[in-house]
Length: 397
Image (cartoon, rainbow, N blue to C red):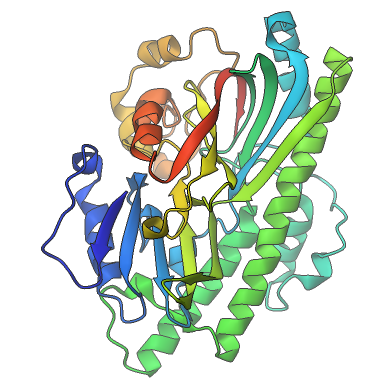
């Protein structure tokens, strides 16, 4: 973990992975250290990389303030993992392929893809009143969908010899709409009060203001949506696996967020803790640090380290951007990295303003991410691994 004292711009911690963090992400950390409402220090996890406003893989504490871009656009993005009773030694490649193909038929995947019909959920009536009809309809059809980018469903071999199921997804377009809406209001809030900010994308809202309370309310709805989204996809996943493998039972389940803000006690006072691409790691708390689609993931248990605001890394973390990975990586090398793992291959870009159209999207290949073993090792003072999970088959968004 990296740590900046508030407004202390001269000191850089000595860490073996420090050089892997982009200069842009470090600049964002400096901006946060100079923010008028951050308290104490800025904590960066080992998977830290450039984000919008705040680095992904960062944690901050704010005094009665909330920064929409320090939560991010995918509010409630997180992980769900389930341990099964099925022995990996009895699982074959055909069964893995059958399970994943059926899940992909039932769960829409990819950016913009959703169900044809609206889904039912007793909290849809809590959607923000300012959402337009199109956004409301899209939210109703996006429940139980995977999303794109680094979101995934995966069958894994646990170090315990059991099959595990894991998925990564969030609040889809709903979280994006909420983040964009309140960032604009935060910019207006700061401009009208002539508040000097280190960067305009770090505009904030007072948590006790009407708009601040509205953001917290709508963020909580997005968090609930994201949690329900993961739970419903995991229900589909379990049902499919049960039909294919039959005599299987489902044991422990973990369902956690890594993009959110919440009030917590730290250093003797209540702060609004923002975890953007970071996992809560209170003493004894279980968490998930996923690797890339070709590398191991880990179930971890928190150490409750106060210097990280009781947090740890949320994944391997990017070392290459989406476009850079697709321009520089070779299909042959990416295929080799995925050897033995069931997956659907590499798709071509559909958009990109024509510049990337037709180019293979290799942005989720293992080479585009940091070494998960190094990330977990660097996080050992924050959380300890209790289960390693090796990928057997994956569905990407």
